Image (tube, rainbow, N blue to C red):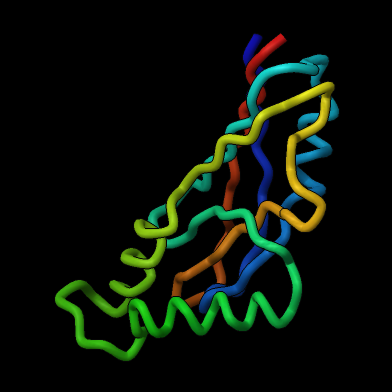
Length: 133
């Protein structure tokens, strides 16, 4: 069985990190699937999904990492948000998480986060597909 859900988020951009674990868990909980996989996918080319510990110090380090790897002030050939596209493509648009006994197999300090790398606020959509039995 495959169940597809969509979750909307309003983001501020500029590297904002939003913990979306509870929203994904809620959608998974609405299904009768107890064993399989949960696939999350962010629609758009300037945002990404990851798993990290949602702790303020780590989130600051995470943002600093992106500025070091792909600086926002760099001169790029693409319009004014090339760094947003590059960061997003490097981090990735989707995650696959095992579903065991009706729960996502996330570690104690592991959360699902939406990272909005764009230069302005956006309406974002995450697609959640739960596949299994």
